[in-house]
Image (cartoon, rainbow, N blue to C red; front, side):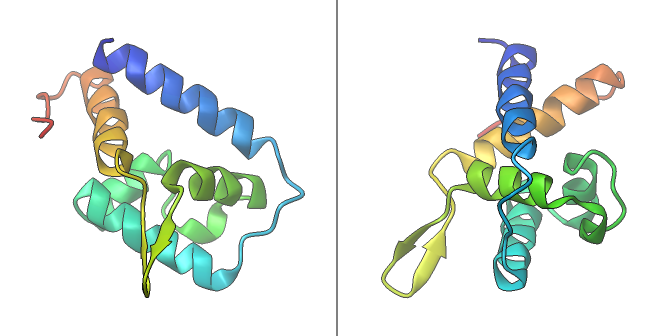
Length: 110
């Protein structure tokens, strides 16, 4: 699959999950998601770009929080909560696709 196809698949999953507004994500979980996204996206600026350009996570709907929670899919290992294995790669795929659409240089996926 190409970066664009991978990104489209991720977006499709996110949009479906975001249409589930009845689920409420706790404030603590929201903070953990923001931290995971900051790390996976390479900083706050990229996280905000990843979150479709929103300047604040406070602008997200509960459905969008649910979608991010499902996208991260954190699992508990001992005392640690860790995002799923491909979380960082998928974040980079989305950012790469966004940059490619804007005519910017490609990111190197590790």
